[in-house]
Image (cartoon, rainbow, N blue to C red; front, side, top):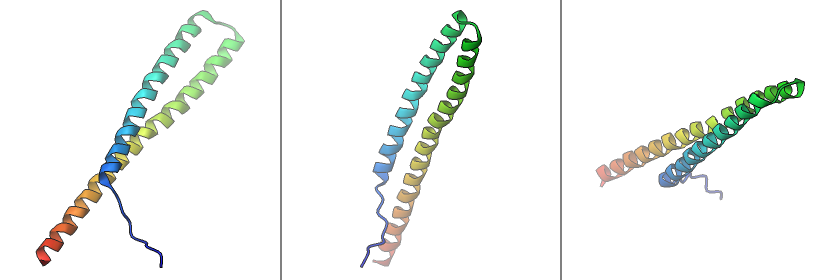
Amino acid sequence: MVDNSLRVNPDALVDGAQQLKNTHEELTALLTKVAAGQDSLRAVWTGSAASRANSNWSTLHDAFTAHIDQLADHAQDLHTAATAYRDRDQQSQAALDQQM
């Protein structure tokens, strides 16, 4: 027989959320440094190749930003789930305590 019960460790969810948040912050800082480098390059590089590179960078920057920002969203989702599971556990424990 298959055990279909769900077991959740809210502390592990909170830890995972914090790791995602930290990674989001680190990647955001790194992307900011790369963007500063691109700005410096743009100041001294001109021509059609430079224009294509700038266009490509803009596309990449937008895509990277969107993906990196999803890490923060997922971190918040994990934190919300941890809170919900903790609340549910407390409610279940209170119901059991009342029955005793």
